[in-house]
Structures are given as structure tokens and as C-alpha cells.
Image (cartoon, rainbow, N blue to C red):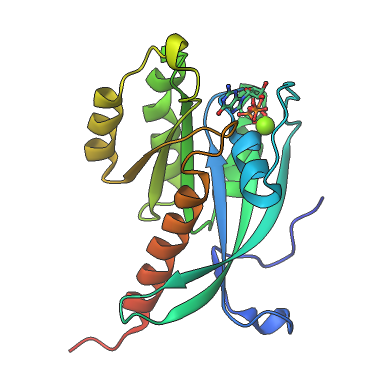
Amino acid sequence: MTEKAGWTGRESATDDSSFEGHKFRIVLLGEASVGKSSLLRRFTENNFDDEYKQTIGSTFATKDVKVIDNSGVSRPVRLVIWDMGGQSTYRELRRQFMKGSAGAVIVYDVTRPETFMAMNTWFESFREVCSDAPVVICANKIDLESKRMVPPQPGLMLKNWFQSDYFETSAKVGTAVSDVFTRMAQIVLAKVISEHSPRI
Ligand SMILES: Nc1nc2c(ncn2[C@@H]2O[C@H](COP(=O)(O)OP(=O)(O)OP(=O)(O)O)[C@@H](O)[C@H]2O)c(=O)[nH]1
Ligand SMILES: [Mg+2]
């Protein structure tokens, strides 16, 4: 799949006559096997696969959501979500895709503390490329209660550190998955609206 030329994190819908709303590119980041593709699949197809199929390079999926803005108006938002393979060999490719994206969902696996420990590196590499785009943290696989090694507390510390939202999710069961993406849509929409309102 190739990226459309001239894409930025925010695009008006003028190039897509069937959709009237804002369109945002979001990237999914985090270590290999934390559940990025599974979260995307759950969100876009409401499906889950127990078998691990490593993402080769990157793929994307699109979903339209309705977001209530600050004035209570429901607005259509199209999210184009890029799913980056977490293997380190894709580092440069990921940098290219991060450029100009409107926000990042950064995921770790609560059963593997090393994936939590890597969160700061993911955050920093995103910040290097997108200095003020919003980030949402996803503590995934919370259905694996007996295997859970990272409790909520460190996740909440990360939330403060990154100044971001934090969700505990399960792509398997579906817990809070749509909340993650809907919240991201809401934040990026609010940001665009505030950047384009006249300053007094
Ligand atoms: N129990 C449970 N398993 C999950 C969950 N999310 C993902 N998995 C499993 O974890 C494995 C890895 O999931 P993926 O979605 O492929 O992980 P990824 O982050 O896309 O991995 P890369 O593409 O290599 O970066 C798969 O076997 C999934 O079935 C979850 O919420 N709960
Ligand atoms: Mg994947």
C-alpha cells in the first residue's frame, strides 16, 4: 500500500467528495507483539485473532467516527490509522510515517514489563518528529489478569509524564478499544478547531 502524495496529519475532505468532515492520520506505536494490529482490527472490524502475525512494514485502516465538539455539535471525523510493525528494523520507515501525523497511540503489553520500559523511547521518537501532536497511552491485554505484571500505577505515572490520556484495553475482549480512538479523534479535532479560531 502506498501513501497518498501530499498527505498531512490534518486534511480537509476536499479530495474525497463522499466524506464531509475532518480527516486525520494517526500512528500506532509500541514494541512488537503488544497488540497494535489487534487493537486496530478490533476497532475497525470488531474482530480478533489469537494467532500472532507480525506486521511487515506498515499497513493502515480507516474508520469514521462521530465526535461531539466543545459546543456540543456532532462532527464526522475520519481516522486513517497507520499500524507500524514494532520490530526495530522498521525504525526509519516509522519515522517517515510519523512525520505530519495528527497524533499517536502508544501501546504496551501489561504482561511484559519490558514493553512498558520501552514506552519512553517510543514517546521520544514520536516527539522528535511531531513536537506537539497528542499522544494516547494504551495498556493492552488486561484480560490476562493472572499474567499481569504492570499494574495501573506505573501507567498512570506515564500518563502524567507524557501529559496524555491513558486507557486500559483488551483487544481480545474489546475493553475500551473504541474509547481510545474516539478520544484521540476528539483531542485532535479540538486542537484543529482551537488553532483555527480567531484569537481575541
Ligand atoms: N489475550 C490477549 N491477547 C492479545 C491482545 N491483543 C493482542 N493479543 C495477542 O498478542 C499477539 C500480538 O498481537 P499483534 O496485534 O499482532 O501485535 P503487534 O503489536 O501488532 O505486533 P507487531 O506487528 O509485531 O508490531 C497476538 O497473538 C494477539 O492475538 C489482548 O488484548 N489480549
Ligand atoms: Mg502488528
